[in-house]
Length: 178
Length: 242
Image (cartoon, rainbow over all chains, first blue to last red):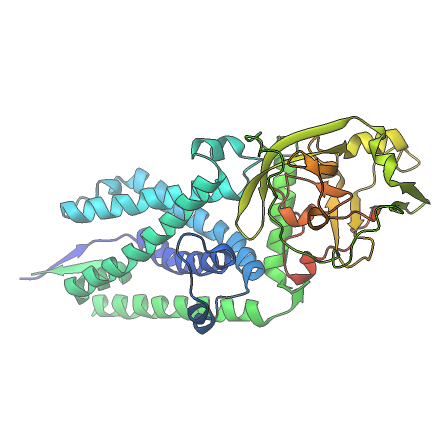
């Protein structure tokens, strides 16, 4: 006897896949910006040339400050949904998943706040100060990006291991229980 | 069967979405540009500018930072317009507006009170450094020489600045130029300006990215239309407000 379970609502699926595109574009444009002053992890020249991420600071900034709107708006819709629907309890996840998914939401919020702190360090000087100053905020912003870059492959591997049924639930919404 | 249809529709939407994203990104990249920035990105930069300058007119001070010790050499970045040695002995500052053009000697800059502060200098590349600046507050300079205003008493919208050889040039909104920390500086880190930091006179505007703090001011322009800006022509944001 198989049972059809509605797992992910339409709004959750839409914001999830929207976020995949937006986050990828934020990381890509962020790296174009980071290249101009790569102080935390040095990007080797050959590597930068091979990936075509060198000499593109202006382009990176223009993209970053364009996509940021989508990233923040989409994130707000997702957060509003989580709170209103009660989904934030992540009822059908195990403990490790709960920790990982909660952490990634906190990272996203932190990425936005530290981003604002380095985007407007005079206008939002109070925020920059709370985060420990301009340089500290820039480092935190970089760290959050690293966090996403680590999270994404782990998340993808987990989904691959869980199989088609799991992936399908994030696309079509339902899962088949046997 | 119903479930199968739902899966097919969902997968189609999923594929379509990511295809559209890739197509859209490539269309934006290859499409028309305004000053080397794709139209929609440039328009968003201008939208961000309007939003931030309306919501938060430039009033906040860039926070005071510990002063670097006297003689600490400030970081040098960018030598455009500074390739030859400055002619300090015969240095002149040209001030131009649609209705008049005057020439001031360098000494004119000492007519107003010397203002100094120490704050973070932030480069658009990502680095920052605590720097001390001292010089004439730009708004004091305007008041003293009765500059920057039209015949009806209102300010011009923009200020343009150029190096004497006109190889480097910036333009800035008047509100930011009237900010109390905007200086025509002749001192950095408690020492006389060095040639590569813009001797004998440079702009210091810590509420903008460093590329707006033009070194070696040869000409000041007042205008209601935006004067050209070197880095904006390479795709950078014009406002650059922090």
